Length: 270
Image: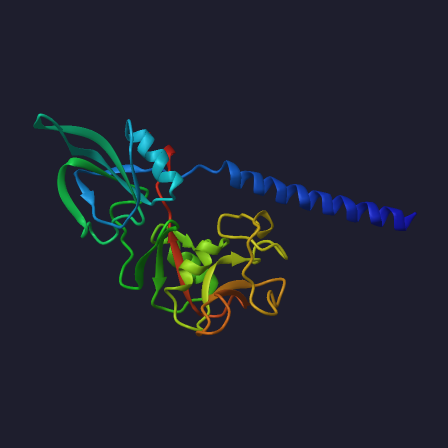
């Protein structure tokens, strides 16, 4: 009888844990998407254009930019010259509303913005990012804006340092993110990112409380995870070795770290 009760308790615990994880996964799918906010009028950004198209209005441009994973876009009017001959040459001008989906937003005090009365510039990110001298700002195309620390801190201290600049330790659970972020760190130098089991024993989760179980992607290095509890670092191996990988380290280890600047969300800008 005791054995049956023990088995029932175990099954109940497993089901409860599974339901909690499923609930967290559902929250990921329902999370609000970032919002493109009008940042500058009578101007356009010269950041690299991912794709362009003609649109009917700015909301259609927003949808197009989102589909292309653009972090910003230019929306404006362009004049197209149309020539044809019917006995004599005729020239007409056609005005179209144009949407330019941009790979990255303006992050260096609008240094690539140009005046253009026919355009407006929209971005997912704040126009001013006060990061201070301890960080280096970088854009990972189609992914986000990140800041890389110039100092070593333990995991808790790194979390606090990110929060002070309105950021969080970087979410890395995708191939785009892992590979993109690794390009900006030193070779063979573990760097803290936002994945740990500190607050939820044996459940790896990011800084938003989202369980690793909710995602299909993994980038564990050989023999990793080496422990069921700890904090995750990102490692960029030397050339001729495998792709960037995740490595578990003790949370009190002092390492450099990567913060992620949070984008703008619609509920803040009606």
